Length: 287
Image (cartoon, rainbow, N blue to C red; front, side, top):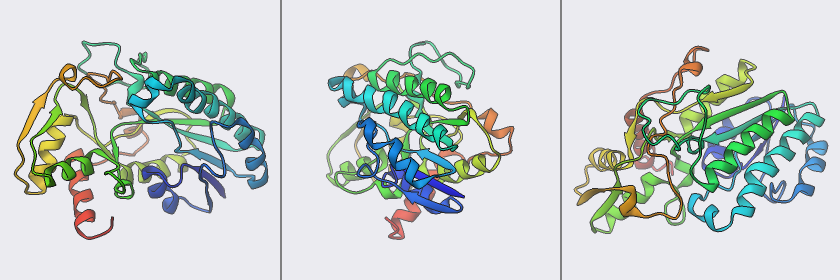
């Protein structure tokens, strides 16, 4: 089996590549750039993969509001072209999407299933939703996986490439920390997502699946749990989304129902347990 993985240097890509079976081609933007249509079909024709996995995206939520053309070109048009090119070489297509396809229903308080009507509230969410539809239409052998709040040990460079690292960095500065407490979601470890993806691939599944760790929380509650497990004393204060005043709107409730995944025999651990595993790996120097 030959598997091509786009976005192989990202958090998810770097956890997924070593877990995949067969011959894996770890592709970067230098190999295929979703914003450049001409970079896609020829490269896949050369590789002749059996499966194409897309971990790449324009995922800077706030920046997408300022550069919508790029977000749509990558998250929608680029995904369509990639799915189409995969179909041309006879490959299955796996694409990762987001809980941010939801949010329009402000009164929602129960997890979203795959059959619920989406309603994004940002350019990022809308472009990712379009990418889902276009991928499923372009390649009948497409598997779309929606997930939420990713963090992984490979995303810790630079300024702290995920929420957990950002919180730990802020704690180290000894300053008060304010975190939004009215956005409900499920933080998900990329290692757990990668393992579940490999299992789901082995079933031959297509269509739409939700994959996250179990349970639900808010970003404030996640921050508090990070500090508790790390035995850090931090001046932590909850604030509202309105007070945070980010350029892009976020869903107030975007917890995903993973019952469909459980029905094929795949379940992920609770998010606090996954967080503990991440912090243990960090402590052991695996970052």
